[in-house]
Length: 347
Image 1 (cartoon, one colour):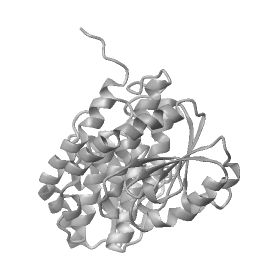
Image 2 (tube, rainbow, N blue to C red):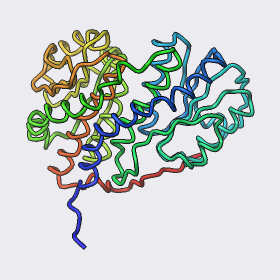
Image 3 (spheres, rainbow, N blue to C red):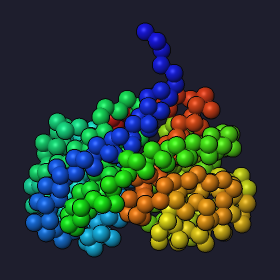
């Protein structure tokens, strides 16, 4: 049996994403049926339960809720249920539990408790027969297929798309902004290849990375920091562009690498001033996104332009390639980062 090269699984799973997006869009009708039930129940508030990469996907969905549905939304603290036994009144509340595996005990307990307290519960997972799916009233299958690399790539982006289709359906949309995402994902991966190689060369020996974004792109900045930390063992920290200027910018200097996620739209526009300040302090800025050519940066990685509300689904793709390349260049194996397992069980 031939031994697999380091990063083999992660590379293959990154490359699968365009086809996964196209397939998920083709199966939109199943998600639309779930969305119709939610719309009929008319929730007044939306809560999201998630951990790890799924927590970043949930934050993306929080933006979708507040912007597209104009409903208040929040992220639950699972320990209020699992450790403290809290039983809030959740009538007229939609609780969406996001988990790639659907097997985390704390999310299962939160979902079960929320349903008992009157919430409409929806599980969004990549494992259709998971305990979480059984616990929730409704479920959305991400459909990304088995993911072998420990670092989530295709399951993360497919979860973003599934959440977008769900919340677009709840508002009565037809998924038009997602229709070409498979094609655009392929063009993004192809078009960013040379810039990613250059970024790996440039940042191979960096020790500290700061990631930043605004609006819909903030979840991408958070996921970027996690990917760089877990695959390349970098000290990576993510900040909203708004928070960055409230104090953390004091730690930015010529030794700091800054990965800025900036796509066409209001979030990208709001990041211009932030990056002018960061660039002025001597930081080495890598801009990723469809508006990367419009900000102060030392290096830019292009992303196909879309409606801002679906931009995070594409933004993360070259970042995943960057994390893979840096891990390999630094002698690691991103398929099996030290100390990590595919499914983390917490309570």
